[in-house]
Structure formats: C-alpha cells, structure tokens
Length: 195
Image: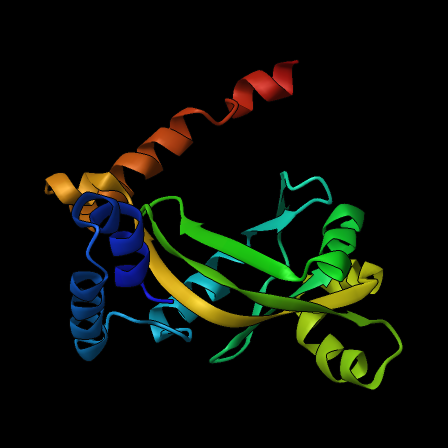
C-alpha cells in the first residue's frame, strides 16, 4: 500500500466516491515513485544515529501497545532489528499478532520515518541469533542481557516531519531551537552538586 492509496481511500474516496478516480490518482503516484517499500540511506542514517525507536504492537483486546526500544540496528535495506532485553508485552503481542510499526525521530531536526511490516522473534541460542548477536557489541555489558532479537521485515517506510517545515522552518533553525531548549531543561550542574 502506498501513501497515495492511504490518503485517497481515507480522504478523497469518501468525498468523490469514485474508485476509478482513486485508482487513476494512485497509478500516477506509483509512476512518480511515491511508494516506498525499503529503507533509504537517510532512514538508515536516522536509525544509526538515534538508536531509539518507538515500537507499536497490538494487544489481544485490540488496544495499542507502544514501547521504546533503544538497541535498534539496520540489518539491510529491508530489515531492522532490536535486542529484546525487557519487552515481555511486546514479544507476547508479536507472537500472537506479528504486525509491527516503529517510528524514529531526530528530536532536533524534527524529522524521521515510520516503518511497518511483519516482525519475528529470534530466540537466544539459535543459529540466526548467534549470527546477529555480534552486531550488538556496541552496547557492551548491556548486550549480555539480550534475550532474543526482534527482526522487522519492512513492507512500508515513509518519512515523517514536523508541520513546522510546512510553514517555512528550516532544519538548521529547528536544530538550533531544540538544542537550546533541551539545554535549558537540563538540571543545573551547580544545583545538582549542592543538593
């Protein structure tokens, strides 16, 4: 499914009630390359720099489960992986309903992407786990707590950006603003040492 299909079926279709028009619009969108089924170089960069992805799964009762995962890695053009350390609800949900979406956002640039697809759990002490586990060595001792690896087969990946860009904000301006903001909310080192 591409962005055009989603937009036209959610927005245009109820207004025009014309499937032929919807299909014509979507066909043109596919010709222009609006469909994205794999990770771009920029998406890979975001994962490599940010590491933290927010994983959405679905509970048995149909309600969402959202959980931050801080050990994300890019496996290849169509797969993302994270080390499962303390994620019993996420793993339970994926075992029963393997659909998963993950969002990555650079908090300074206010840009990122969303990726969705089907996830699988790779148990510790399996051949595939043993092949993938060395990739997590950058986390040092924390990697020893990895119980398994979740692998997402990306079926759709779409960029995300702040509405601030729609009104003319530049990445440079947003980075400067959010850097100043995050510095302003940090505890003062003098106050912390006097406490």
